[in-house]
Amino acid sequence: MIVIHLGQDAALSRANGSIKLPGTDAGGLHTDGSSIGHYCAMAEAEDGRRITSHVLGLNVIFCISDFTRNNGATHLVPDSFQIDSFRRPLPPVPGQITVEVKWGSTLVFNYNTWHGASENRSQENRYAILSPWRRQ
Image (cartoon, rainbow, N blue to C red; front, side, top):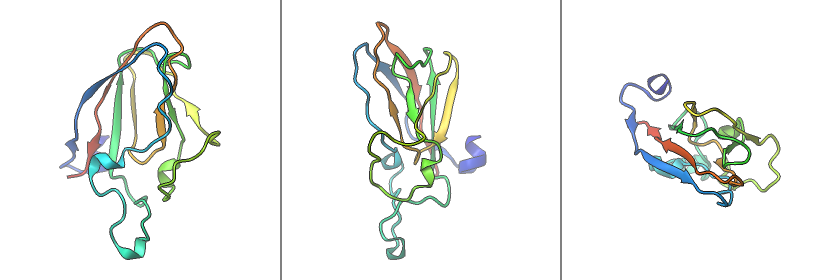
């Protein structure tokens, strides 16, 4: 999937663990374009808009724990990678979903998708490995 969307020379930007502790607040919606450098258009004709014409990078989340509504599962706004504005959407965001999956699952989505962790209201840590990929 990485090669199909990013090409043969795709590169792993980094890999890090994520531990969502009990009682941790929601992180708020964001995109990860800064992980790949110049994610905003550089030409004057683009008028400072996000690049939406092609995939610049992919987030890959390996779920080491179950992701549930109670333990900090990832919120996503489907198709939001097509929005060219840099403005963060204000809640409530139409179409926002909570991705609930079992441990061992992998989430893969466009860097420009608005996303964020939800609040961990459980008594357990929620574990994941984050490994964003980008074009060279």
